[in-house]
Amino acid sequence: MKTAKLAWILRVVAAGILLQTLFFKFSGAAESIYIFSTLGIEPYGRIGSGIAELICAILILIPRTTWIGAFGASGIMTGAILSHLFVLGIVVENDGGFLFLLAIITLICCLTLLYFDKNKLFNLLKLK
Image 1 (cartoon, rainbow, N blue to C red):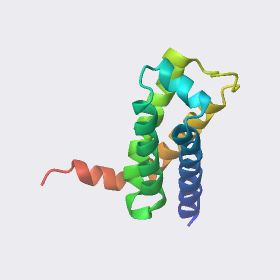
Image 2 (tube, rainbow, N blue to C red; image 1 turned 30 degrees about the vertical axis):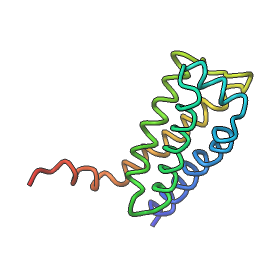
Image 3 (cartoon, one colour; image 1 turned 90 degrees about the horizontal axis):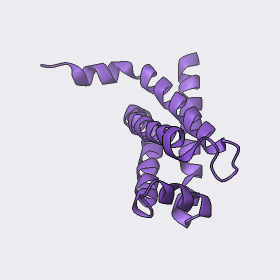
Image 4 (cartoon, helix red, strand yellow; image 1 turned 90 degrees about the vertical axis):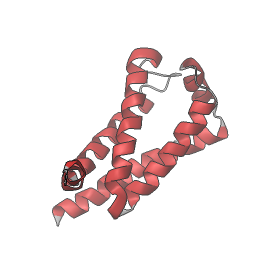
């Protein structure tokens, strides 16, 4: 029972972070444009990552598809973290490292959700 409650907390946190950043990506906020311009993928990378994050957030909130959303979001957040470490820097536009921290929190939530659903992942790997 405790695992089910924790899983819902993790789902809400991960999906909440993914969803709240969408406003900035889709509205063309200056910080988002700076990030994706620095990465050399503005505007398509910004809009594309926003769409991918929206899909992952929805999948995370549906218990049957949580593992799919968590898997996708883990990949997206890994890319975000690596972008911060190797291209952008941890602090972007004087945010105090807040975006980097959100990416780490989201990744931890998603990896924990994947751990909780590890049986579903292992069943995919079984050959019949």
